[in-house]
Length: 254
Image 1 (cartoon, helix red, strand yellow):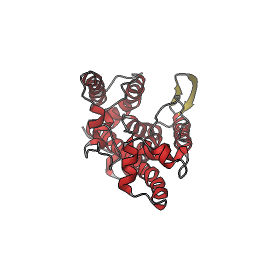
Image 2 (cartoon, rainbow, N blue to C red; image 1 turned 90 degrees about the vertical axis):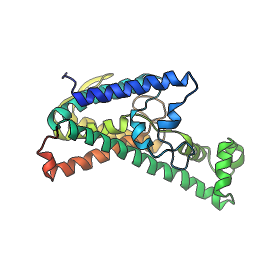
Image 3 (cartoon, helix red, strand yellow; image 1 turned 180 degrees about the horizontal axis):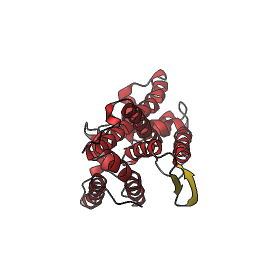
């Protein structure tokens, strides 16, 4: 257990404030999710700032989403900030978070357009497809063209917003694992210590399986953006390689 560092503390405070504001404003008829969460770029709710703001949004259905992310940010982010300095850590955190949103969006593009192309070949046009989605008539309209799973992917990827600090946190996890590979970690509900160099790749493998299967999650059922997690991890890995080959790895950015 270590002290919380300044940047990590400020990030946690911002996330908690945004979560509380989302709940309070929702009771007054204002939905911050539609404004700040990350939507598919062709969704009417998409705004150019969402790849950044979505990093500070968390589900209001349960506080667990927020608590897990903030606990992980404190545990692993503080160690990195103490070694790197404030500016370097914040830069890393923001880049991996935005990178997670980018990978998530690219995967969604595949999910939307791979299934949309089937409908286009069946004689529908793009405007007609989006109208059917907006009117929720897709099950009866497309049941003989797409499977239920394909329809779920098309509609879900187009409409479901992504939110949370998990993508940036996965980038932090990868950096921690590369810098402290022999540190022993364990899940709260599986109290078996495992070295970071095995634990973190194992966690990423589970996310990959979850992303491919479309449902599996180590933390139970739910709408988990697995490829956002993997995207944050990928950008974290690439940044660590870049740091290792440049002077950035040798300098603190205070």
